[in-house]
Amino acid sequence: MAQPLTHNQRLLHWVNEMAQLCQPTQIHWCDGSEAENSHLCNLMVQNGTFTRLNPDKRPGCFLARSHPSDVARVEDRTFICSARREDAGPNNNWADPAEMKNTLRRLFQGSMAGRTMYVIPFSMGPLESPIRKVGIELTDSPYVVANMRIMTRMGREVLQALGDGDFIPCLHSVGAPLKPGQTDVPWPCEPDPAKKYIVHFPEDPSIWSYGSGYGGNALLGKKCLALRIASVAARREGWLAEHMLILCLTSPQGKKYYIAAAFPSACGKTNLAMMRPTLPGWKVTCLGDDIAWIRLGQDGRLYAMNPETGFFGVAPGTSQNSNPNAIATINRNTIFTNVALTPDGDVWWEDMGVPAPASAIDWQGQEWKPGCGRKAAHPNSRFTAPAAQCPVIDPDWQRPEGVPLSAILFGGRRPSTIPLVNEALSWEHGVFLGSACGSETTAAALGKAGVLRRDPFAMLPFCGYNMADYFAHWLSFAQKTDPAKLPKIYFVNWFRKSDTDRWLWPGYGENGRVLKWICERVEGTAKAVSTPIGNLPTPDALDLSGLNLPAEDVQELLSVDKSGWLAEVNNIEEYYKNYGDRIPEPLLRQLAQLRQRLQ
Ligand code: GTP
Ligand code: SPV
Ligand code: MN
Image (cartoon, rainbow, N blue to C red):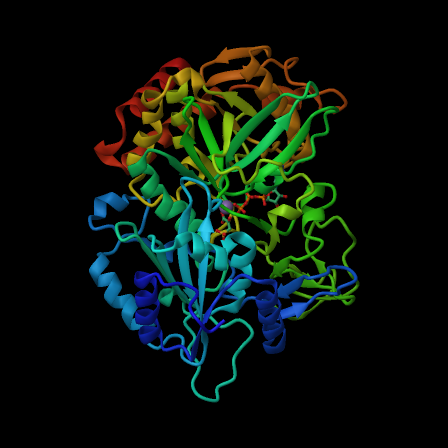
């Protein structure tokens, strides 16, 4: 659609101004229609960005291969440009906003030459939700348009709902202008890492992203708007923008428990969110797999809402065994990025649970054979699929006001020390546990995988302001409402390993056993032992029927490793020092009390 679909003067003016800057050949206002989508997909098939998958196997599905330099979020090129450096805090890269805008204007100057500028109106949250946010992403990437159409509410009705209202400007360019006559490449981007910029101006608010076409770097509604920018607004307005899945667990008696869980990137949110519990009679339905916006309801309880409409999920490891509901979700209308292509026009990845094809085209477009020593799919390869296609999508997943939470879980990849599940003693203790989250790093961000880093609330890469102030904001909810109405807080660890590097806990559908204990704790019926670190299940309180777990493994999963925990306390203390005297006093008190209980 060449014509603007709006009379919003501020929007028209901004689009005009950015077009002057970026110099695209044409401007396309996205209406979000089926026709527009298939036109763009055809265009991408023609220029090699997309490979259409075999329609008998995966109708409406496409494969994209990125440039090998553009495969994950770039945390060291991500900036929070608040007016004052201390408001970004030690958890973020900071630059002076005026200087950064000068740098960016130079980069964006002519950056869309030879390309179309797409105007993507999108809403994070249902249009009727009181806390939805409208963004407008300008991008020169049709791949971004196709993904945003799955991940957000996008197009004509968003502009209608916006009217003359306020929106968040999000400017994106892959940073690869075309000279006249120059032929395009399948995945244009800026290959030099030092020239990529993912920049947030929380006070504007606005987002400028340059040089990458991948995931959270380019789909600006997701991490940039719904987490970094939204977290700043949430603090100001008294709510929470979190890196959390939302699920509903229904007991055999038919009682529903809504649970939100924060795990760092590639640590199991998608898997838990649509898990099929192995325990008979228990059922999980999914409301979201990555982001939750949480606010206080009239009744004093916390309500969680998923602002997205799709899943941008990790492909490797997704199998009929580990996540049958994801497998069913991605059988149609799905974009696959950086997985392998089989000879019959289907996709394949490591640990997909089906035999490797005799040969394939790997994620870099090269011939691949089993045993050749290379991975067929990139470890951070992903699927983009509509949430509505999930067989266990919860009927209330689009409720504008969200769902009332019974429990909040924190977790991460911790091969040692951290038990399978631990119940916080209070809201304050729970916030302490959240602040102390840590995990082995994964392929979701560029950099070395498998090293332990503190990742408070799984928000280290996503909190748009000083993390110490974020801790204080979390603590403040005990004053904003009756603490008895707040969800109970738990720390879980599916990733405990033995000395011989074996998983101690089977995970996936078996995690329902832990969720069952949590619901029974919420009801006040399950047994627990009080320990220095929190309340742990007694071995008989955790339903392990039919599991055949060795008793020594259960013992190890549910015990307190005192020396490990004392080291943990020292490590948390060191970590807190990054925030100087901005660390809220209650957290220092929790740390001191924990140390005392352990000694
Ligand atoms: P992001 O989309 O990056 O935010 O990741 P996520 O938190 O949604 O992670 P996801 O569910 O995609 O899981 C990532 C990896 O963890 C996959 O390779 C899974 O196979 C593995 N995983 C998930 N749940 C479990 C579990 O319970 N046990 C074990 N051992 N591995 C798991
Ligand atoms: C994550 O890294 O936490 C993701 C993938 O969910 S991305 O959208 O690339 O951030
Ligand atoms: Mn994520």
